[in-house]
Length: 570
Image (cartoon, rainbow, N blue to C red; front, side, top):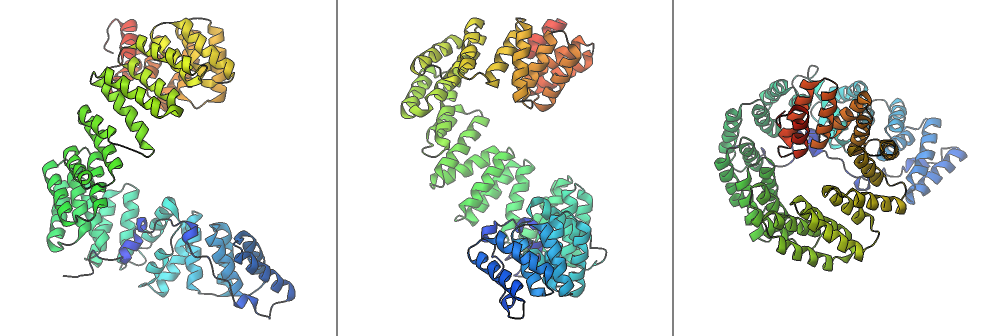
């Protein structure tokens, strides 16, 4: 067996540009001072400029250094000055200057490999793939065996877009260098990113024909086969690799992931168990695979893996958080409450505790929830407004709007003129059809903050929805829209006000924009109603049906549909 396979960093791993992740500039060594640049052969002005540049570099004032070196690189014929200037421009992530100074360096030192590498990467950053390919071509002609390794090892700081463009450039050179396996692998990755999975698989097979032990190509082949729908073939390919290379961890990890994606739950659970037994010390791996399982809907094996990690004391807050969410998704609110309550300390704690309270209401433990929220307000007095508002929302969402109003009245006695609480009480008052209270609270908000777009929008929309003072409603919503023209809720209000004013075409324009930006059930109800009134009834029904798929319990849509059609079903 080839012991190099699946160990260490191969050329293939380097060409896989996710392995060439962007490194912060602070971790990248700065260009070293040029000793030759201070040689006494320079004239007095040049020597003075270079001395200033070096002093600035020692003080980490690299932009000053760049200015002096750039000027001297253009004015002198010394390749070393051009080299230092080009490398500094690249280090400072200025690809325009790096490309210009790199060209000067190459003119003064023709054939310099480092200059070609710098220019190739600079043109990649500038999006000029053709010029980048020209310099990579020169490197490959001179040294096909080492050029790619050196180039990609320097390809840091490109970012995701630059990485993809580098792959595209490398893949474009396969016809000129058909015997270079790394180029075919780069082509496979590039085609995969472009969505050409069949072409990517063909390029991957070409890679393996040239180098049957190409680790990343072997794994990529399984991924591509799976994405093309050949689940059995992909898993059989990984089974062969696992049999041939039993210590290849990446093969086992990919196999577990694909089993989860294929929803082969028993096999996925067994694969996760094997990974846990084989690599018990690598809890980060087990955690990431468990989260992957949750994401893919393979809930039970993932919950079991997370429970094992929790028992081992691994990252208890994070594990409890994911176990709580998984329990919610699995319809086990009691377990979710326990996990949320177990979270202590950190930024996530209060949010988790509030969610525990919300679930207590869901399981008819209203008294326990009220005591829990009261305790939180005592422990976090600085969060009292949001905690009162959260409890009111819990009550209102469970049909207890009067109780919600009571808790907000209590809150506003303790915290008078608190804007969030005024707004929360206004929204509860609307549920109780207490428009006088709603308007009073929103008016008070506007007295405290006259240009508050949230209050203006809420008041304007409510007036329009009830057919009251429509000109005032339009002015309020337009004032909110002037501040937040991208807010879908305000765009919806604009459409609804114009509808109430009888301006159907204008209303349709706004409501279509709101629906496209935020396909909410209330927006759907409004949008569908305007379509219906304009005679576009098939389209109105389609909008309502689409919204009911996402919001099957929407009373707003069903009330609208029944009012307009006589039937609650669109």
